[in-house]
Image (cartoon, rainbow, N blue to C red):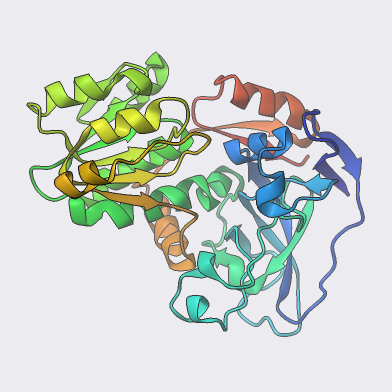
Length: 344
C-alpha cells in the first residue's frame, strides 16, 4: 500500500510502498483511510522538533487525524463490522490502568500515539489501531471531511471543556488564532459557554470566518501585539480566559498580560515559552492549563454536534501523493481551515 513517511528530519516527506497492516490481536481493527488531516504537529515532526520527546525512529508514517471505514476486525471485536464508517481517536490505550478506568484516555500509562511515536499513522491507505480508539459514525457518513475532528476538533473540545468554569455570564474569553483548531473552538465556546468570545487573528480571511462562526469581536492584530487591544476592550480588566492556539514567539508573554485576576491561561499551541513570576501568579491568582488531546467520550460528543450541524470545519483535500506540497501549503498559511490527505 502507499504511505507517506518521514525519511529524514528536515527533508520533504516521501510516498513509499509499505506492507498492508494486519490484525494482530483480538482487539485490533484495520481502518481503510478516507482522509487524514494535516496537523502542525506533523510539520514539527518533519523538522525534528519532537524527536527527543517521542524517541522517534525513522522512517515514520505520519497521520494522527484519521477517519475511514472498518476494513478488518480482531476476534474480540463485536461492536464494529467491516464497512462501518469511523473516526479514529489518536491514542491506542490499554483500558485497564487507573487513567483509562477514569476515562482519561490520553493519560494511559502505556498509551501509543500512531503517526507520532513510531506506530504507523494514517497518511496511508490502511492503518491498524484498537477497537477502543474508534467512534462509530452514522451509516452513510462521509468520513473524510471529519478526519480533522480526531485531533483539531478533539483538542478544541477538551480545552474548551476545561476552561468553562472560568467562562460564566459576563466574562470574556480570548481565542488566539482561528485556524482549524480555532474555528472549532469558537463554535464550541458559543455552544458551551455564555461568554463573550474575542478572537485575535491578523489574517483577513480567517478573521471573517471567525465572525461567521460566531465570534463577538475580532481583533485583526498579530497575537504578539494584541494585549493592549484586549485590555482596552475589557476596560483594563483583562479576559477571564485566554485560549492560546499559537504558543510561539512572544505570544505566551502577551497572553499572560491579557488575563484578569482569577483568570486561566489555557495552552494548546507550543514551540515557545514564558517566564512565570510567582508573585504575579499569586497576586492575580492565575491558573495555567496545558491541553493534550481529549477523551474518547469527548470525541463522541463532538461527533454528535457535527452530525447535528452545530460544529463545522472547512477542509481542503489533497491526494496522498501531494503530501509534501500540502504540508508546505499548511506551513505557509495557505489553507484556511484544515488540509486533508485523501488516498485515491
